[in-house]
Image (tube, rainbow, N blue to C red; front, side, top):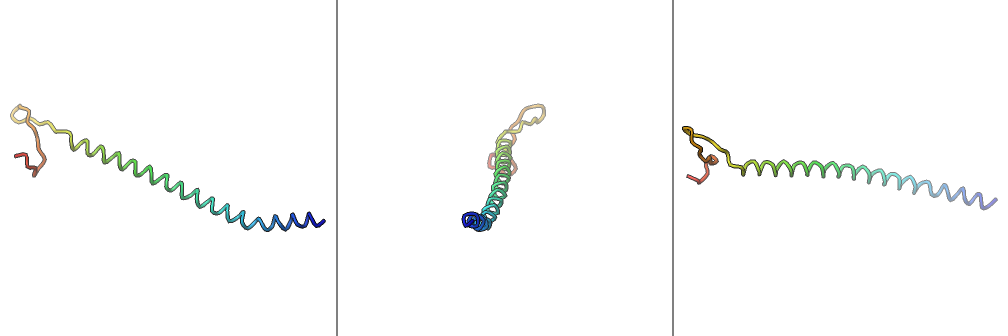
Length: 79
């Protein structure tokens, strides 16, 4: 009989740490999900910045009086 009582007591003692660990696991899972979202956002921002730089570096063609001319950004020192 003492063994059964000991088992019951020990199970009760383990309930509190088990609940605490389950809560910690849930908190970790939530934070990992948030970090995954933040990583996706940063990747998208980096891709957008790369595209914007590539577009800015691409020369724009223009014609003046039917002839192709190079364009330069306003205020640039290319004059």
